Length: 315
Picture 1 (cartoon, helix red, strand yellow):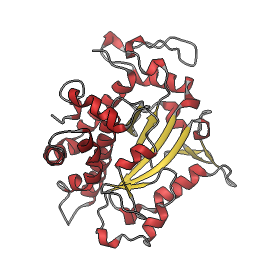
Picture 2 (picture 1 turned 60 degrees about the vertical axis):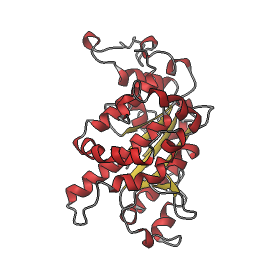
Picture 3 (picture 1 turned 180 degrees about the horizontal axis):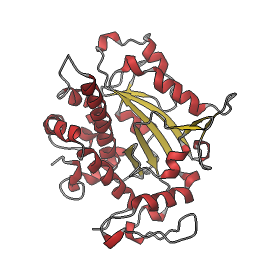
Picture 4 (picture 1 turned 180 degrees about the vertical axis):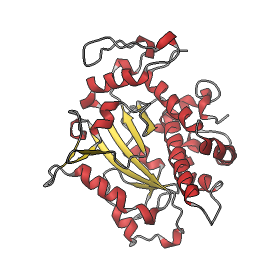
């Protein structure tokens, strides 16, 4: 089956989610909830799932007395649910969302978002990374047609031994290196509890926004930096698990994420002065991957949910 490298990356990203026990187990319950929210699977129903991600998540997050492992597992599931939803709405566009994983993350992208404290490189609090690729032929043609060399000038083999596995990481890295100035990077930090974690994205966004440091702090590694990409944003997405009546426009947790470069979002309908629905991230940060609206591109792939895109497990 012919497939461009962007859609192949998207498929690998989603299959990676379903390969984890926590997400796979939760999906058995979430799928039924999603079916109830989007019974006809229209473009608007699928897009508007962003307003109900909290409800979907809570169908498997009902325990009041949770252990630390429960909290950790819940956080991983929330990241995965957000990743699943965003990728669903991005099919057919040049943007892919992946969990921060060395198997799918192009090394030059990872280098660009690395923060260095003196001689110590630190990975950011980046649960999800959205990459928007440029409007160039190599990203639209069949992935087997791509011909590209590595930084040493050697041809990169398309497949590893015996054509068993596509060499996506090396090919993607070479493409990203070649087109680095035309790529967008969007970090999406996902947390279940808003109150406990609001300060973290505020500080990381401040680090990325700074252009000069007095101490030995720098952003970027091996010659790659976010200052050289086409666009960079840092966003925060929360469930939230805290009682909603405790979150007000004047709450400290709201102030802390109010001015993030990529915005702050939750798995609920937008509420002015507090947070936007996750679906609004698509228009604010992840829009440039197509000239068409998200509704238009979603509508185009719906007939293929049971075939080409069956890995989303919506049918």
